[in-house]
Structures are given as C-alpha cells and as structure tokens.
Amino acid sequence: MASELNALLDPMRINGKEIANRIVMGPMAAASPDKDGAPSEQTIAFFERRARGGVGMIIAGGTVSTTRAYEESPVASVLRMDIDDTIPQFRKVTDAVHAHGTVIISQLTPGFGRMGKPQGDRQLISPSPINVTIAEDQFPKGFIVPGGRTTPMPREATIEEIKAIENEVIDAAMRAHKAGFDGVQVAAQMSYFSASFLSPRSNWRTDEYGGSAENRGRFHANIVRGIREKAGPDFIIGLLLPANDYLPDGQGPEGFAEVAVEIEKAGLDFVALSTGAYETMKKSAPETDGGMIDSGDAKIFKRVLSVPVMFQGVHDPLLAAKAIEGGHGDFAMFARQMLADPDYAIKVKAGRAADIVKCDRQNLCMRRMVFGMPVRCSVNPEMGRESRQSGTSRPAVRLLKGPLESVILSLTGSPAVMGVLEKLVPGGKQEEAIQRRRKSTPD
Ligand SMILES: Cc1cc2nc3c(=O)[nH]c(=O)nc-3n(C[C@H](O)[C@H](O)[C@H](O)COP(=O)(O)O)c2cc1C
Ligand code: SF4
Image: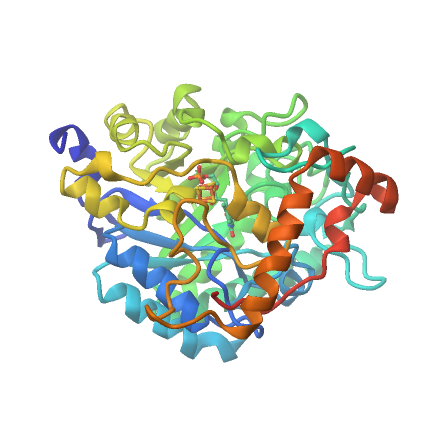
C-alpha cells in the first residue's frame, strides 16, 4: 500500500521551502480563538496536534486581515490579523507547529462582501451591487433552510475603498511574517469580497478592476506585489480561488484559470483550488470524493500555471496519490478529514491507511460553526478539546452551554421544526435568532 501512496509522501519545495509531503491541511475556522481574536491555548493545541500528525503544510483558516472583515464576519470566532496585539500569540502557534517540521501559512481574508453581516446602517460592499441567493436545495448535507436564503444587497466599492483594503491586507501579511508564518494565502474563494472580482457575473465594473482577466485579477495581483515588496523573496505567497462556480451564467475552470495566470505574474508561489460559490454551496462541502479531479477542472489550472497547484475534494489517500500522479495537481488539501483524524499523514506514511478515521461528511462541524458554537467533530471526540489535560473536568461554562447547543443542533436538524420556525421568524433567517458568540472554550 505504501508504494501506491508514494506520490502523496514525496517532499516538494514551494518557493525554496521544503514541504515534507503533499498532504496539506486546508483552511478552516475551527481553531477556537479568544474573544479578542487572538489565538487561544486551544488554538495552539489544535494546530500543534495536526503538525504532530505529520501533515506537510498547514493553511491556518478563519483569519481576517481587515477590520471590516472582522466586524462583518459571518463566523462568530475569527483570528485577527488586522491588529498588532495578536502577534505574540500567533508566534506561539507558529513555534508549536515548526517544532514538528511542518510549514504553516496564514490565510488572509480581505472581506466577506455580499456574504458579510451588516453592522448598523453601514451597507456591505462588493465589486458590484449583486447579492447572493442560496436555494433550499443548494445547502450542504445537514443544513435545513426552508425557502433558502437571500443576502442583503451590497453597494459597489469605490476605488479608494478597494485600494485601502489592498493596503490593509498587505499590512496583515507583514503581521503574519512577524509572527513567524512561512507565508500567506490570499483568500478569494466562494462569494466573498475578493472572489467577487474574479467572474464577470459578480464584477460589472468598467474601471481598472473590471472587464479583462487582467483587470479582474488586479486586486489580488496588487496585494501579491505589495506583500512581495515588503516581505522579501523567501516569503510564500499563495492564492485560493474557485476552480468552478457551477453557475449557468457564471465562470468555468478556463475562466478562473485565465485570471489565476494574470495573478501568478505578480509573484505567486502556489495556487489552491476551492469549489463552488455560495449559490452552489453544496459543491463546496462535497459528499463524495472526486469533484475537481473527475471533472478535469484541476488539471486545467495545472496545465496553464507554472507554480504548484493544490486540489481539494478527495479524502481517500489512494485517490489523492493517483490524482497527483495523473497530473491534476501537486498537493492534496484536506480540510474536514484533518478534523476527523489528525494522524492522517502519519498513518499514510506508516502504511496504515486502513486505520484512518474517515470523515462522515455529515457536516456537524460546519453547522456548529454557522451557529456560533465551538467546532466539534462527530468522529473525533478530541477535536476542539486538544488543549484539555486528560483527567481534567469540563469548564463550568461548557457544562451549561453544551446541553443547550445539543438541543439547538437537534431542533435545527429537523425538517419539521425548521418548517415551523420559518413561519415564526420573519425572513427565514433562523440563524440570526441564535445569539452570536465570540468566545470559544473547549469542553
Ligand atoms: C468547520 C469548517 C470551517 C471552514 N472554514 C474555512 C475558512 O476559514 N476558509 C476557507 O477557505 N475554507 C474554509 N472551510 C472550507 C474548507 O477549507 C474546504 O474547502 C471544505 O471543507 C471542503 O473540503 P474537504 O472535503 O477537504 O473538507 C471550512 C470548512 C469547515 C468544515
Ligand atoms: S466527521 Fe463530520 S463533524 Fe467531523 S469533520 Fe467530518 S463532517 Fe465534520
């Protein structure tokens, strides 16, 4: 078995930095930061545990790089890269991960755009004034949202606002640099602010940020150039963008790859691929392996880009190794599977792939995140509690909140209850009836 998996175990360099294997932990807002957006002891333990499990590279997700992104975040607990105060705690994360020889980079989310939570009277901003409608049948497994959901209408961002965001993201990258991260990933996935520049469907601008592929990639290219100039040649700079949005009037892999090529010219070191947009959200948390490999979407990027490509959507190590051998990409990104089994890489290496605890793809983790609860995993009771010493009892706050969360999850998982709730809560925004929490503690 081990030899069939060799393609997943070969080291490879990204911008001169050796990555021990091709197994990358994908970005996830699952690290239970403190209330102030700094990494908590749990955050450090969560990442350290995955590094100890042998993963070659970690992309730290759930990170915001502008103050607007922090304020409008639809996720209750985020890691703040937009302020200096969090740098010392981030340093503890990078030290803990580096102790295992794992490379760690920080995702930089410029803003949530039309998926943000409006604050007071301030309108959301996006490259163009187009909101998002998610039909009832487009939610991932486990989500029941009768009638679907339509987000508030954003206004068009001004050129000054766009440039200010570029500068804020560059500053955030420098904080990541100071905190010991090996690099950053500029996030342009789903329907968030930066992703909305990429496709003519969500970008109708007639200025330098709209129109041609070069213009639609200008925001990201300016950020990449700015980071390179300040952080120097050795800092890893990656980009995350959709391989396909699956929208009839949207953009397929050829269109996204064309923009990626333009951004690559600014000095990228890798390109990571996500899947879908919020309108096609189901695709972004697939229920089976295959996705961008079976469709050939990832290969289209691999053919036109010179930097390493990271694909996602395959949890099985044999299929991931075959995808690398077959020229679909250079690295396999695993997100949920890394929550389910932090020892994935060690097991692959030791020829114990059969012992991998498989992710059930039922998305309890995501539902908890959406409801502002600390992320947990159905098949890994240690997940989210990595910092707890064995033998210690649950913190008092968790003793109270744990049972309440179970009730909420069970009610919101019932089609009958959600159907009634839809009629009681105007606008079908059940999730807004649940209080936002900004503090996460392991129970
Ligand atoms: C709990 C949770 C949080 C996530 N947070 C992020 C995030 O902060 N940034 C991001 O780009 N993707 C995020 N994702 C999406 C994953 O990176 C990934 O694209 C998705 O889970 C599908 O890949 P998988 O099949 O390997 O899980 C999140 C996913 C989960 C389950
Ligand atoms: S097993 Fe379920 S809860 Fe755990 S990572 Fe997979 S989908 Fe999420």
